[in-house]
Amino acid sequence: MPDYLSPGQDAHHRRLARFALCVTLVFGALVARLGYLQTARHDELSAVAADNYTKEERLYAERGTIYDRHGRVLATNRPAFDLFVTPRDVRDVGALVEALTPVLDLDKLGQIELRELLDTREPYARRTPTRVARDLDKERVTLAEAAGERFGGVSLEVKRQRTYPQGSLGAHVVGYLGYPSAQDVRERGLVSGEMVGRFGVERLYDGALRGAHGYQRFVVDTHGRRATAPWAAQASQRVGALHEPTPGADLRLTIDARVQEIAYNAMEGYESGAVVVMDPLTGELLALVSKPTFDPNIWSGRLTAAAKREVDENPYNPLLDKSVKSYFPGSLYKIVTAVAAMEEGVLDPEQPIDSPGAYEYGNRVFHCHKRSGHGRVDLNGAMAASADVYFYKLGEKMGIDTLALYGKQFGFGELMLGLNGESSGVVPTRSYHERHSPGGFQHGLSLSSAIGQGAVRTSPLQMAVAFSALANHGVVYRPQLLLETRQLETPQGEARAQTHDPEVMWRLPSAPPHIHRVRRALERAVNDPKLATGYRAAVPMGRVAGKTGTAQVKSLARGARDGQGELRWEHQDHAWFAAFAPYEAPRLTVVVFLEHGGSGGKEAAPVARKIFEAFHQEIEPIFDAQSPLDLPYARLP
Image (cartoon, rainbow, N blue to C red; front, side, top):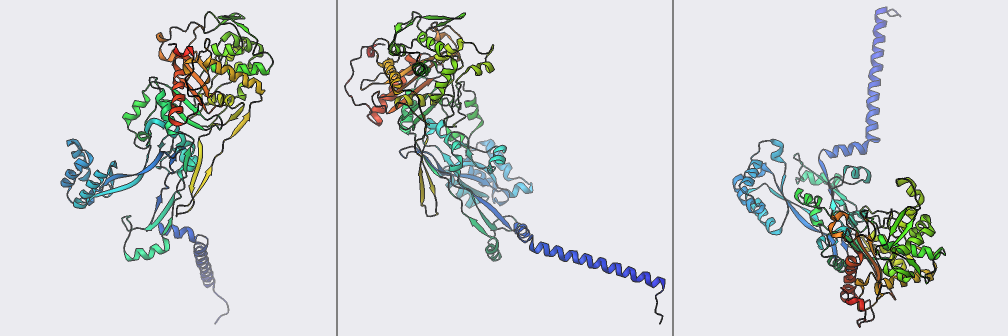
């Protein structure tokens, strides 16, 4: 045998070697791949495989209940039943349609449409449950179940429906639920299709109320339904899982539902406005009313096109929370001017100043609301009579930046709660006018700011904070809406309660005698027998301290406002009244705002009086003196 290979044999051996190498590489790659899949990606691929015969169902967390300060339910959940039909499972279409007619209140057309749905020949539609009714009551649920037992194809899905026992009474403060937007789903990690807070406390504390969802994983058959065969029980031991949801926290608010009702009823006869009732010693909000209101039961998942159109077309804008929106405050802002003038040393509160019916400044005449003027008045008289020229002169001496400095000390220009698109308002300065006013800053703007006109904007909530600071001698509290958060910690129902204490924002840096002077002037603004513009807020059982405000919204000369009834509603003055009581030891701050309501003294002050009297008689006796006071102005019309 020769010891060498022929050229042909050599080439054949090389081809075999290359083939063997390729086979070795391929098998090596397969082995490496299998090893990688079995180790590094084992969990991932096992989950994918399990998805072929398992289903994961989200278990929604129970949303927390909202209570008022005394435990009255403001928002809670109840079971709601939706009715579904699956065409392929119906044994007798005609009989089922007849049986569901009283359940669904079907007319002839409705019966025809339901029959067409059940007679469909489209494969997917025949095997897919279709919802035909929402939120059935117990009687209809019983009838539907009976129809399903006899004729097949009927199923009921139970869910939790948010309900508001107080109805429209606390709609703006409690709020309502709605479906999240695509942006909410992306940015807040929400689940598409779940109901989340869209307004009021429901939105402000949505994270706490919503809780954490759980899930349940189980084995399904080829039709995607839960499998009950013996093999499924064994498979469930390997892939089944249950993660219980964590219920949302229960909230107890500072709001008193009865005080809320009193405040709302006091506004009877007025189409649009707001009332804020606050405890001046803590900042706790007892009532937060905006009018007109709406029914949150309709807006939380059951809103129809007709109901939405009714609200959208209402000229008084029910969905706008007027308690936190900013408006011209008018003469209520004079508390800032008075404190600032004394602090800056430009005002002796006991020194009378001439306050005629008009004041010339530059090339403009600034009018008083009283054409004949008020003569020479001190601070008590000027506040009682709301003498505009008195405060024009103070504003001229201090300038707009000084006024703004003191305005911010009272909390104006600050966000308080972040509720319902709250407005921070405007405390105008020289630089503000340079940026926003036609022609830039003019010195006459200081005079307008001194009486709460010009560019000044404040909200009823901010005004309650400011008057509460005067009531408690200088402490500026952040308005408080949440008293207690109660969170379940164990499945056995053990709960952890967290109380929320009052928050002091800061203290007025003003000297106590100056605060006392303004408090005294506000008491005169209600109780002075000759000058008080707020006398309609006086109560017979004690003393109220407060201030009227009539804020001009259409450019007419001050003092020429008699034709309010002839103006269109949106051009009429805003009516304000803010007060605290009792004067000696305040327990309650009340702010009334009537949008385009006219005169603060004639319209807003009586609303506040109703609230003080009802609170004293029905909630808590805050006035010590029970005998009527002999006040001559109380008999005036």
